[in-house]
Image (cartoon, rainbow, N blue to C red; front, side):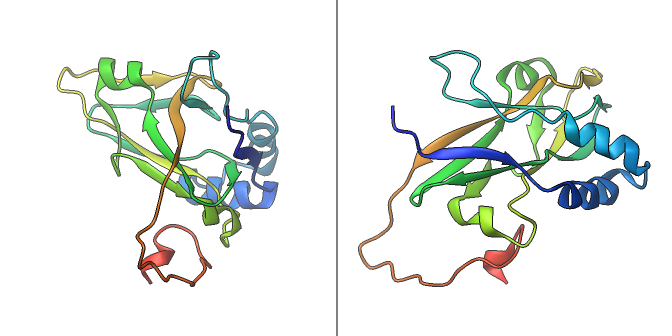
Amino acid sequence: MKRIAKFHKVSFEQFKEAWIDTFGPTGEPAIAEIYQEIQLPKRATAGSAGYDFYAPCKIQIAPQETVKIPTGIRVEMEENWVLKCYPRSGLGFKYRLQLNNTVGIIDSDYFYSDNEGHIFTKLTNDTNEGKTVEIQKGTGFMQGIFVEYGVTLDDDVTSTRNGGFGSTTK
């Protein structure tokens, strides 16, 4: 098996800024505790393709509601690889839980972004059965799969990333 990446936590300062932006000011001691307990993504079994991302706190999503989650995670990977993020299969099956961008794409140069390559996810409970999704702290809610990719023969891109989400189209 080819080893091409390593997960890290973002700095506490980056996490705190993202947390407050998402959930509002909740007190630095509470944010510090959440940050300390962030788990790096792991595979559940030797045969698992996906690395499970764990909820940094209890997450409750009512029907048709959306929540943005700062994971506190960044990933350093070799060039020509991408991390594709999906909801955990069981949550999608039971609740129609969806990532708002369908598949999250984490490029290899995102690690060097102004936001430290902080991976966020935006989840929507798209249930048509009226079910509220409740994800306990420390429970896997998203999975990331590393995929190698190629480029066209006439590709001549030399620009580098200097920002976070959407920065490559600015």
